[in-house]
Amino acid sequence: MDNEYRRSDRPEHNQVKKKKRIRKRALIPIILLVSLIVLALYAFFSYQSGLGIAQENGVEQETYEFNSEDNNNGKKNILLLGADREEDGAQRTDVIMIAQYDFMNKEMKLVSLMRDIYVDIPGYQNYKINSVYSLGGVELLRQTIEQNFGIEVEEYAVIDYQAFESVVDVINKNGITIDVEKDMSEKIDADLKQGEQQLNGKDLLDYARFRQDEEGDFGRVRRQQQVINALKDEALSVGNVLKLPKITGTAVGHINTSMSNGELYRMMASFLVRSDKNIETLTLPIEHTYQFVDVPHAGNVIDLDFETNSQYVHDFLEGNLEDPEALEPEAENTTTDQ
Image (tube, rainbow, N blue to C red; front, side, top):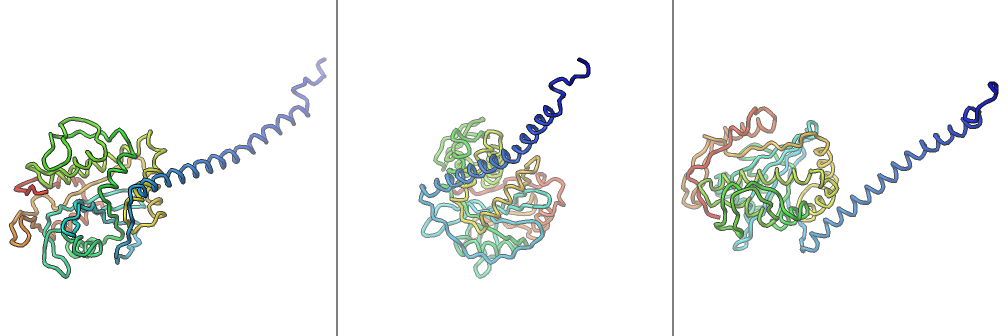
């Protein structure tokens, strides 16, 4: 009959459908909460797994004297050091970099300092900058950088080679893809062949350390920057996103740093939300602002124009350089001692 309700049009049936919709909607926040808890637990245990790798390697973390002050300007300057092998009770820094992270603009910048730069060391005779760490640790190096370049660093991170190899192998156990520019074997523990290939942690470290050619330390610094970008791209690839907690835990477990875990997480999370995730790089000295000289007590050193280089690095960190790559120094008369 036309005046009869169809079953689906009855008020009680509509009320049942409405209640079901309400129950489904009520389940959504519960599902989201459970998902967040699962993700948090996964991140926590993955991070702990990374820390466990460092413990298995017998790494003992230390806290060093470091009398810095936070500029509270939305940017963080971090002294990054690669600890060289210890010889005669002294340990030099094979890698000296200043990383800056801008929290406001979510930008990462990296300044590499050539290890043979001849610097004024507070309280000591002038010498190569890579010797400063063995004389007075990260605090003396902080003072040296501030005195010679006018750059105030607020944090430090000292990375040993074992850490590098472990982190690389966690990122990709099959190795990191690198276009090896030439055959390399002299004074490194690897026999690398020219061409694109996947290098494990040990071979990638040897690639980054090689300097037995006409480029010397200039080529090594360039390759160090190349390796950092390759590691960043691999770690942030789609297949590795879920590994990030373990990668972070492995790195933190091997690194001696003044930064707290909370600061590291905050910086990493901030960087991850940026779309392009590029790292801008600069190498000191700037082209045409230095010369090689022989000093009786220090050997062959890089004697540079500190005023010009200091201005360039300040402009770079402040975002006032249009093309930093055009300023990269070219190798000339470099030494090749390992």
